[in-house]
Image 1 (cartoon, rainbow, N blue to C red):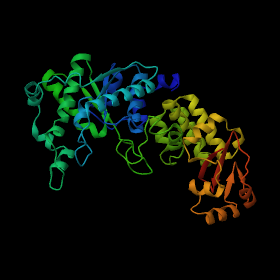
Image 2 (cartoon, rainbow, N blue to C red):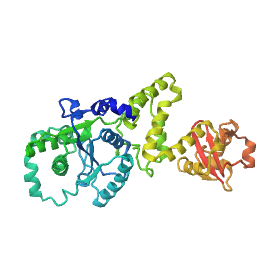
Image 3 (cartoon, rainbow, N blue to C red):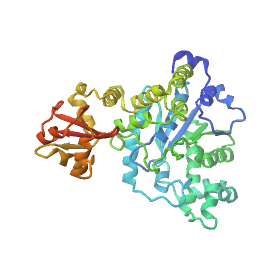
Image 4 (cartoon, rainbow, N blue to C red):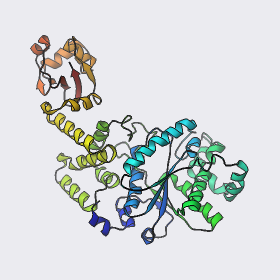
Length: 420
C-alpha cells in the first residue's frame, strides 16, 4: 500500500473497503480508529500447512499492523487437540500432540514469512491449559456459562437435533476453551479485540462475555466473511477438495500461481482487495484497464504475481511468470535448465531413452494407443518444442532438444516434458 493511501484511509475505512468486516461488537466501526489495539487472531493447527483461506485472515492482520496496532497470533495447540465443531457435521478425527506441535512449527514459518517487516507475538494456548485442573476449569470458567444460549447456537443445535450426528462433551467444551484464551490474553497482554472468521462468531462472543462477567470490562470481537471460491461456491478451507496450501510441498509455487491466474472475472476484484496490499487507486486503475479489455487478463496476472510473491518470494515468482509466458507463446528456446527443472515438477515428465516416441505419447497419456498416437501425429495435433511433427519425424525418432528436453503438446493444454 502506498504511503499516501495509508494516510488518507483510516483503519475502519480500509477494512470496509477491502470487505473485511462481517460482524462486530462495535456500535460504530469507527471506534477502531480511536485507540491503539492489541488484538489476537487464533489459528487451527490441525493441518501441516495454512491455506489461502487462512491467508485472508493474515491479510486483515496486516491491515491492523500497517495502521500501528499490536498483533498476538494464537496457535491452537490445545484447542486443535479437541477440534472446533463449528461448520462440521461430525466430529473431527483427533490428532496426537506430536502432530499438532509439528503443525505449529510449520505455521510459525509461514507467519514469519507473511508478516515479514512487522512484529507480532506468537502464543500457544497449550501453555496455559496443559496443567489446568478440571475442578479449577469448572469453577473458574464453566460456572460463568449458561447452557441455554450454548445449545441454541446453530452448529450445536444442528448436531443435537433429530438427524444430527450428535456432539461430544469435548467438542461442546471447545467454545469455553476459546473464551478462556481471550481471558488469559486480556489479563496478560491487555488484549481487547479478537478477530476471527464468521464461523467463529459464537466462540468470539464466549470470550467477550467471560471477560465482562469476570473482569467487568468491555472487550470486542470482529469477524471477517469466509472467503468463497466464486467458481465452486465453497470456502477456501483445509478440508475442502482441492485446498490451495501455502506450503510449497503441498501446492507447488507454479500451481499456486496458476490458481490465481485462472480465477474468474467476477471474483478477481474482490481477491485483489483481500489478498494484496495494493491500494484503492492501484486496484481501480487495474480494474479500469481490465474492464476495457478483459482478454489481457491484467487483473488476474497482477493478482497471481502479487500473491505468489507474498507467499513464495519475488525470485521464484519471476521465474514462474517467465515459464508461463514462454509456454503460452511457445517460445521454448528461452527456457533455461533451471526453468526445465521447475517445469519437471509441474507437468508429466518422462525420459525418452531408447523408447519409441509413440510409446512415450501413450505413457505420457497424450494418446491411448499407438493407433490413436499415429492419428494425432498425422492430423498435426502433436507439437514438439512448438513445431508440428510428422510421421517421418516419429519413424526416425530424432528430435531437436532444448537443454536436453522436449516439450510435447497435444491440443491447447495437454503438456508432457520429455528428457534425453
